[in-house]
Image (tube, rainbow, N blue to C red; front, side, top):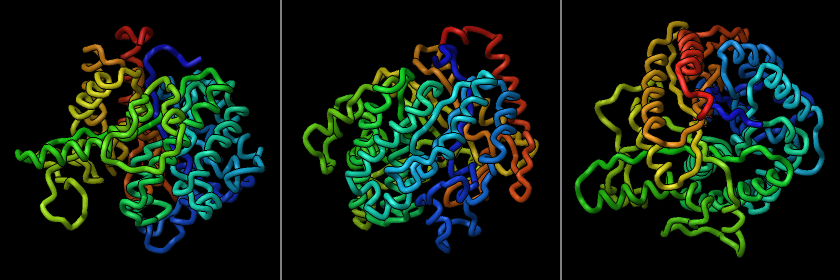
Length: 434
Ligand code: FCB
């Protein structure tokens, strides 16, 4: 059973850390293809080796044990389990996750498994990927295979990671795999991912007793303008980024104004009950009315002034986390887990700005919890510096520094700070009755 105390954790994702892309029967994913296409990733980086976590996972479990975390959120690579996306199961791939899960449980760490963190099997992409409705059914089959193998030991399931980002970056703008530039034509991938989510919830529910969730990227909208048109733009952006990926899951259907290839019964499947919402928070988004017709979008995003920025250029706004959690609690009444929160700073090993970032975000978290918002966990992105998608290894999010040529891990100051914070929070009160 999932521990019922507040969960302090860390997060990672398969393609960003594992490496070993051609080992033990793993099939190719869209990220292998994308990373090996010239000009797609900064510096020509790929995830071929990444943190070599596939071989060094035991060392990484020890690092987590040293932190004293309650839980570890990792993702399972679909092409390791089903190399062509469907059909024959690769038991060696499943065995890797089985060893990892056992290692975590031995150290008292709850395994939290994400089923899809963007590394779709290439063969499914060749058949249309998430543009094709059939992929939703293949996703549910894959969920069933994983649940049959690990369902007795995984303590919480997350179906999809950030379907918003996968659609927008991967299918509308093409800056992520699979690199499609379809604009509005990418929208069927939203419906098919959510349909896949609902089907997977059903497959998991019939096989395991562990809670089931989804990890959405949420961004509070900051209104940048005073006109009615600005208000309307902020409303439209919020519907697209936030509400679209939440309300259908709760049986409220899609917000008005969107058209999807919905078939009879789809909305019921999508609304299959879940136990919690996963919240990935990085920053708010400034929005105003479009200043020209150029994009065809009903809004325009605006850089937010007056905030410190991470090395990625993302504004640091701890209060945004509080506003977001309060709003999600008020509107949806599901238990919340912060499934990603973190920052990119190159400084190491004394990463003072990451310490400040975590301290300030966790202070806001504590404040909203004290006000009655039902938040049950906080997972730092990320345990390790890793392959940051289109940025390659240039952006470092880890509590632990990784020297990529050698794989050597060196805990940073933030690692020590988080370890001490977790220990103090447990002593300090109430953590057992989260
Ligand atoms: C999120 C992704 C995660 C990581 C962070 C920085 O959008 O889910 O994999 O790259 O951003």
